Image (cartoon, rainbow, N blue to C red; front, side):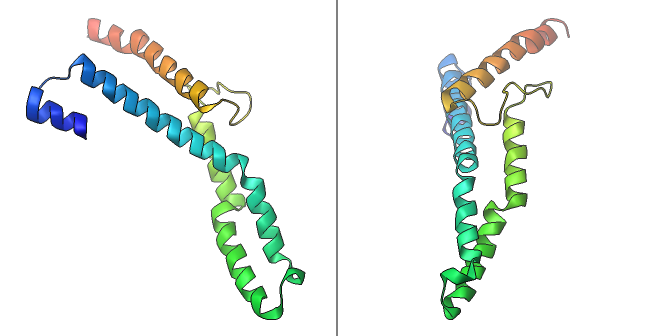
Length: 138
């Protein structure tokens, strides 16, 4: 928003400096989103253990069993099989190139820095290959 305001209100031009600041923000955003998805994905087994514990009635006295079951149901919605499938689908979407091919062997194998570097290099290559060609040959 800050970059937009500067262009519209002040300079009326997208300078190289503003463009680089925008690219930097995009890289930070991409890295943050990927690292958060990876963190949740890599820690799902902890949630599964907690849900199993809460569902085991032997772990609680009669009154607390009800609370434990309610909490287990809430956690199941957030971290259960359906949520896990959606998370995997989202991570798979992150780890595909522009043609829909995977560029990783396993989900979440790249570090955040590697991921950001790879997708931005991929975008740069696509820009050079397609956008510049289309601009030169309308």
